[in-house]
Length: 405
Image (cartoon, rainbow, N blue to C red; front, side, top):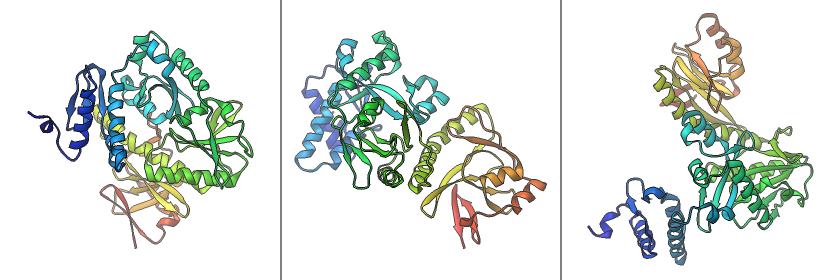
């Protein structure tokens, strides 16, 4: 079979060029192309997912495409670099990442939770090996090979980060700052509090770790800058999908804590709603699988977002009597009769009683053991209809909220 026959689909040319480039560099390890999963399998070294590299190549034009191929070849070659402690210790960097993946793994797949420690409720600290073309996470098996503990490795990574060039910032015309780093580790500088000393801020630093190379900062006492910063983060999130974190944090006495907005910022509220929906999307199939393993005939309700003026409201769709319902601003309920009601979460619990929290989940899921009946249903029907549903028909079709009339 010829080399061309190993590769299929629209990604054929890219995969073939990278394959040939790696082989041409004298690669001594296994290198097999998995067309179905669009990756290279490298034997005991693991594998390389080609999709991100391919997207970078696809976006390039002209000579930049060859540069993207060269980068992809180097990326694969670095997977075979010397893995010893002596070779890696000076390449270590701390990584600030979203907490949800680690928290979900701890809940549902503990063996895949990896090595990390919490920074805040929404962020964790990991450690990576930062080579010129790749960033590889340090996992428990690597720590075992090195004979090092995670705190010891993190200490070395922090020392390396402090020796790097300080993070630069550019001031946006709306009063917040945008990081302008050169090593794609901007958000990791949150672990170096003196990074923010030179910024002209009104109040303590409030930061949003949008992506690994985009850190936004505004002053806690500057509501206009906070709103503009949140709007900028919202734009990035809606254009490019999941970020490191959409949650604003405030630096207090050298520690990051959740920032409680008292300004009524619409963009900050939207960021919170988008994060809620993102985590629900990740967790819903995991909790459903666990319920199936446990033999519990319980559905996991969908969550949707609905624009309300400049903000987004979260709505749980309770369509099966026995359900886990994600905590939301509103609940749309098929009541067991022909009627479908929309009610605020607080009004639902006031009418039918507090719904118990399902244990061992990341997002808040509440247990509903059946449709409201009798007096509870009467109280629910008598409670106020939200403004967005007033005078309109409300329904759920194929798991989606429908509004008509």
